[in-house]
Image (tube, rainbow, N blue to C red; front, side, top):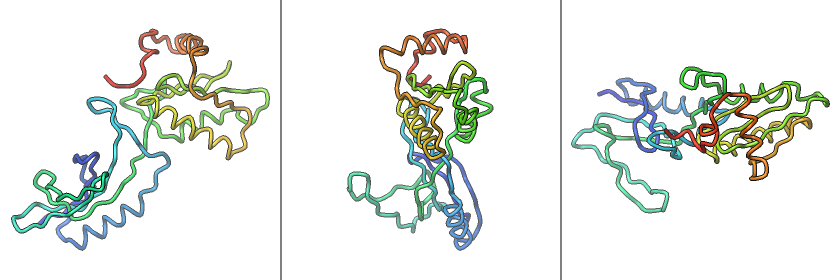
Length: 218
C-alpha cells in the first residue's frame, strides 16, 4: 500500500507532496508539513477557465479498497454528506493549506519569473523615507501602480478584489514601518481613470484596449 500527502485546490488534485508505504510515516510528514506552512501572502484566486476563488487543502490519501469507510463531513452550508473518493484515492485526513501568491510585475516574464510579495515591498520601500520623494499607490482595475516622477512599477493582479487586497496589505506594511511619503489612493475613480490610462500607456507602450482590461482572464 502506498500512502500519500497530496495538495488539492477546490477539491481537485494539484500535486503529491510526499509518499511512503506506512501510515505512521505519512501522518508524521502530514503534520510536519502543516507546522511548516508559513506563508507571507496567501493566494485567494486562480485563473483556470476564468477567475475563481480558491481553497487549498493538504490531505492524507491511500488507494481505495472495497472495505474503505469514507469520511462524513459538513459542507459550507452546514449540510452533512459522505465524501467520495478522489479518483481512485480515499482521503483519510485533510486540513486547510496556504499557498504563497506570486505576482506578474510589469517588466518580468509572467510565465517565467513571478516574485512573491517581498519583491513588491522592496519596490515600495525605494526612497520611502525621503521627504522629497512622495509616491502614490493606486488601483486601476486589476492593476496596482506604485509611481512618481522617478519610479513606475505595476503589479497585474487577477481581478479588482485581488488588487484591492494587495493595496490594503501594502498600506498596512507602510503604516507599520511609519512611512509617510507613500500615499495610498485606493481605487481610481471616474475623474482619475483617464489620466491613469495615459500614464500606463506612456510607461508600458500597451494599447488602451489592454490597459482597460479588468482581469487576467483569457
